[in-house]
Image (cartoon, rainbow, N blue to C red):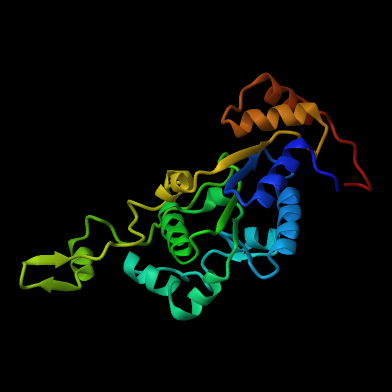
Length: 248
């Protein structure tokens, strides 16, 4: 279908090669816009566009893959050095070096620590890669790692020590990855979010419904306020009696 003014602006940014963040309320057409953008970019770069998302369900929405699956790092265990070793392995690096555009959908669910090392690894192999992020930070947040080790665990930190430089007495301590105190942070809290110098396109025109009561109430609840006049009006609308249909 046709694009509204802001959706078209996002498409033009994509064609320009700039990094940008596409966001907006539910129903404003983020996924539709993303599909149009991906189709256009694949015309420009037939084998150079990778579409990813933090979860399998989100990845299916745009016909992509999870950030973890190959050529990603899998489920990283242990240290950041180990994370990088998988990401920058010979087989994986061949894929990353061909990359022109990396799309990350549902970026609100991407853990900041993972996001930082994932993007840092990709950009090191492909310095001129274009990064397009899509999502709404008022929706699903990242999930913290509850099963992982803690910074308070001396035994775990001791395990991370690989070598001791006898000449200088310095300890080479690889940086632990996935410790529970560091996970569950938003992607915009990462260092690479700032480094990407993202432009932001916020979609505002809702295409999914024209029900103004529902739209106002959804906006209020999205902002964390469940007691506004619009929400009360929506609740009142739902309290009308429903007549049975076919005995149900």
